[in-house]
Length: 105
Image (cartoon, rainbow, N blue to C red):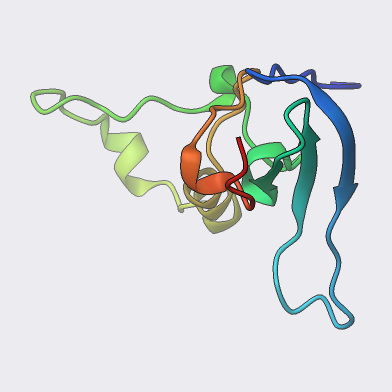
């Protein structure tokens, strides 16, 4: 994968990435919308570590019986943590009102 594209439900005038001195907090992307509002996007929504939807192994259903060799396999914790922390890639970034840092309309 060389690049990923994102779709926003509003126009963007400017953007910047937040950064702390010792990287204590996670990064966020700050956008200035076409209405001069500040909108924040957490790193978990635009990180390159997000799994692709086709790479996620589907969990067996309630009535599915796992195969015997699947029960004896060691669990890859890095892959498990990666899929739990980051939501799967989706091109559409949702417009959530609580992500607006300014309340001007």
